[in-house]
Length: 523
Ligand SMILES: [Zn+2]
Image (cartoon, rainbow, N blue to C red; front, side, top):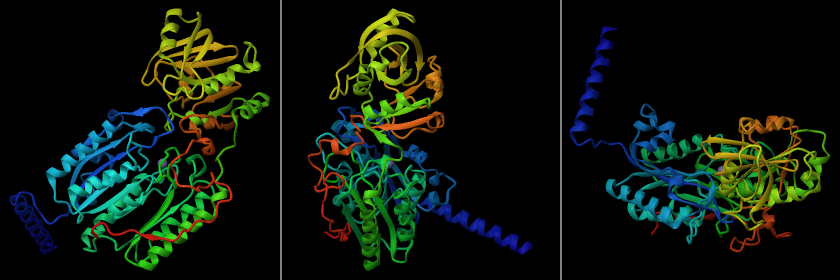
């Protein structure tokens, strides 16, 4: 026992000396050097809203690690490499990113990368659905510019959201690539970890870049509200990804649904498989792609969906209250401007809601800073006649005139700043100084509203968040217009590849043969 203890002690001393000598060599050791960078946003080109640099809340250097619990200081992976985190930004969904914001963030990343090379590996952590003013395929542009700095020897591992887009250029310049396998994205961290694990494994084993990358574009464009992996056919389709990826000779397999609210040739579904066994790589990719194509007709909204008119008819006739209606097309948390007045205009035009004794309806919400100022002047109980909304997105309806009684004014909300409730006929309209999503019961009750006792509640949202879902007596999703219109057939696509399912009826079966993308250092 004593001997064992002594050997353990000696081992510690030996390792201690080794560490010291490494430090004496200027901290250089045999660990691979891996840089980290990435920008994540899904931005709609069908919304007039713009996204600026601040929205990305970019973290730099050591702060980047906070995104990755699997790279915490005491984690195994952290010790497997010398990590060089640069810039990582993550923005909520929104409108197109300004060219200025994109260039500034890319420049900061490249400047940091230039200072610290060379790199054995690069972890490229992106969403994949960023749209930038005057620039196609921003993530493809970004990775090319990274390659110019790091060179072609560095192994790049890209991690993405399954709602991202994979252009040929992105596929060509990355060596490893993967995306989430669940929607909602409960496996986001697990997927990012997989991208890092695969990168470390290929570097440590000396296997380097996978020999083959199969890429299959699939002419399908579907909204997220139809492609949850909790329900069929998404559930079974995605259940096939993990078994496909663990085969001998395969490094990873992935299916991208793609992003429907941008109008570029790269917006469509994609399958990619990487590995060293050519036949398995191509066969596996083709199998996943054909599985996707076979079930394309089976994707449905995860809750009943109808036109606003039909939704209102159902809600008015229903005995179930509150009857919640999702005003989906302008959902600010998916990329809508959040100030489209179309739905509210339609509601207030209906005779049922004209008198104070009509069915009670809460509308949440519409931004209107000038309206809020006038409401403050008039005070609670006062009368108001002023306009709100459509300052950013007035394509479907102009600013709406609201004439009624002020029921409440609240100050201090983090997002809205000031909130006003104005009663117009039997409708309680929430007008905010700044846009705010209404997702919690307390968002309503703090304004003196009681959504549980209200006949109809209309919220700018897509799929209901749990608190609203649990409150609902009934629920329907309204296909309303806006920057994230869920009725894709109404979107004015000009540049996506055609034919595209489901836009082009009776299209022929596409060629879903795997295309082998050249390895990144083939030139
Ligand atoms: Zn997503």
